[in-house]
Length: 445
Image (cartoon, rainbow, N blue to C red):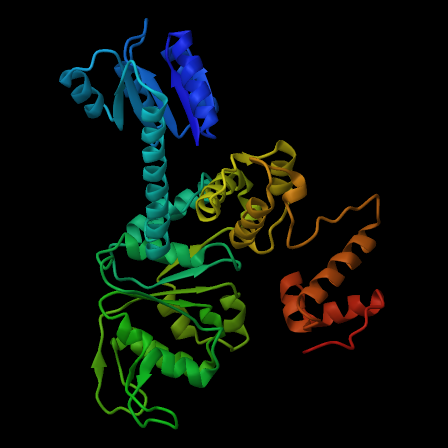
């Protein structure tokens, strides 16, 4: 833990610092309230030991200022005047506890260990709540980008309604987080939020996952099972990768959205539900409409309120915010005390294009926190999913060839996926592979 001692007596600062450093804590000491305020603006502290009687600004005045600037900091008042009034005032201003002069090292050690356990449990509780609710709150979406703030305002407007929402954006931009925020801001917040990835399942399994089935409906159906639609009754059903739903199944889904009723597979009874539908995709549904791969009526039924999430490379000002946020999360998970990243490491992070968007940045920071041996992440600990291409005055063709090789290898020479990632059609990719002499023997087309 990082501890700041604030006392105008040098002997108190020195003795307290010595005791606490022996216990293994990182300690700094200043002689006045103003110096303390300057220090906490520059560096984070877990605990502050504040003397009650100091010139210019006393302990209670400093405590009041600290709680406004850094409310998460645990404050302990040091006093030679052990009165009930002093204790009550300190507690009212937000002090965790108070100690009386003269004090002994063991008393200090016990109090700090108690605070350390309190902070550990508090941080674990915060993390646990985030894991349970998975960003139900709009406040869990971190951004200072103007386009994202427009999305925040749109979420506030659409959340109280039951309108269907279509969230579009590249993979890893946080579409599910936006869907959960809409649910969390709605009147359905205390009801289920059920998520289903439509791309992860074959058509037959997708049908049973959504609608459920009766006992004996097919081989292996030994018991009745409720589907995702039924489980989401009263709440929200989030259909991720909606563009991957087969055409035949699109009509069945349209009927459920419009009529709010369905039958389980193998069942005769009509089941009525009250479900709010939110869909998401990273595919170009407009193009799929033109190609006849997506039903026009379903498209417009889903797109009552469209939300487009910009990729991370279009909101680079959010990268430092997200980096600090992820460091905080992984500090709690790993028990580390990483303070931040070096200037050069942050430059690397801001310049990178993130084909995997926020999800990729999260992975990079998790790996960096694990690898970090000090309290600052350096550029050597920043390992990108897609290596930074060092051009060394290479021609555009040479850079393009390197990138195509990287994408082909990443997708196991699956031409369709590689072309999609490169934002070109398959024919163009084939031509470029021929141009650069790239073999296609391992294709899995």
